[in-house]
Length: 103
Ligand SMILES: Nc1ncnc2c1ncn2[C@@H]1O[C@H](COP(=O)(O)OP(=O)(O)O)[C@@H](O)[C@H]1O
Ligand SMILES: [Mg+2]
Image 1 (cartoon, rainbow, N blue to C red):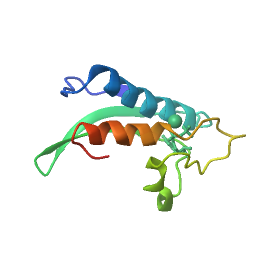
Image 2: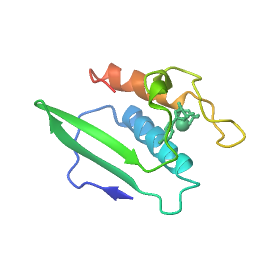
Image 3: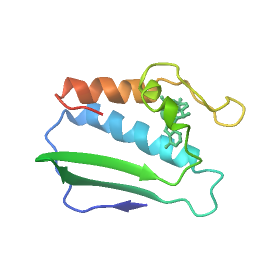
Image 4: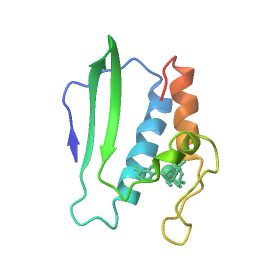
């Protein structure tokens, strides 16, 4: 895993750790079948705003579902293949919005 150095954000410590935990546990879970998993965390400037990202080379998902995944209980992968409750990304979205951001 690669983490860019010097990442800095002003946020509620406990809530932002829930965000990081959810994104990274997804990255690890969905890269499980991948032989050489790669997870990266960092930030970049986009149109004057700071954008934080967590990327991975996981099994991925159909981009048609991309928006839906941030709603609760949306789980396109099967429970038998990848365990989960489907509330992680919905929680991430709530916390980011609460901080005035978007996801
Ligand atoms: N890093 C990822 N790679 C591939 N699919 C992902 C990733 N993160 C999330 N997803 C997809 O988004 C869905 C919703 O994620 P989440 O709310 O964290 O639920 P859960 O992890 O409990 O299934 C997952 O079921 C999965 O289909
Ligand atoms: Mg999850």
